[in-house]
Length: 342
Image 1 (tube, rainbow, N blue to C red):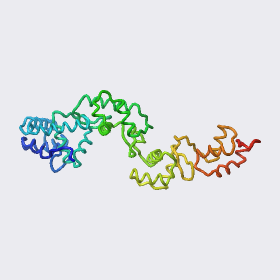
Image 2: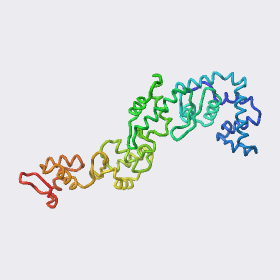
Image 3: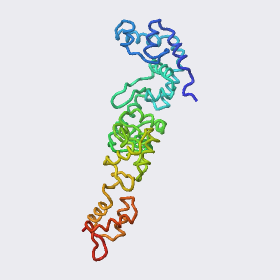
Image 4: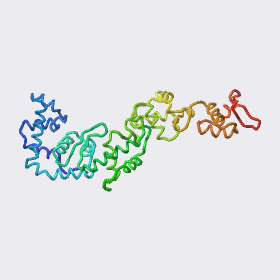
């Protein structure tokens, strides 16, 4: 089902009919309403006509004013009412790119919709800045509260945080004060979050700070970290490489993946080809190092207790632990049959 009942191109064609040939040509070029969907700059149009960019701006403003005073504009009031209702239904403030994609996939129709938004008195455009994307607003009060809530949410996140979507929505809504309950549904909340350039979602559907490697993954190591973290337990490097190719659509060679995992402190080898995250409490070192660490921390222990503790750190066979305990340079057996550091 289409998001709108009218045909944008036909509406715009009727609205442009009141313009002079030169003004019409300029508007078509400025908003990409012709065969070319490229929107020309004021400078570009000025050069093609041999006039200044300021003069082009004057002609554009005059043309928009002419359209708004025309009978055709009055006749299309239902179109602007429908457009207004649509923006309200999507949250009262919408990200420009997402909104136009919601209306149509082709750029030409999107350009015609954009032109209608420019013409409509009820629509206000906020330009992109360092924190937010281009957006259109029909409810100033809601817009202000949404922007404040996004800023407040951003302040609570560290660069390491990765939050499931349900939790980020709940956290965002906890910062959103005095907004109508009808707006507080998952779809609208996600549209509001999409306004932000500070907070974003990674390909695994987890949210965090945009500039974080966890959200804006920049290479094999970052992809591997996200894959193993999502998996929740150690993974073989061949599986990691396979998952990177499937989920991130990046060709991950097994050998390259293995080399990257070895080099990065975020990963620990815990078995034959098995890697875990160091943030899970695993530490680097071979089985002997792990035994030594356990005994240094806890003192002499029975063989079974040592094996139990090592198996929490390493995915190896029990016999492997026992064989390593036989190294007389590192370990000795006490009179009561326990093992201690030599």
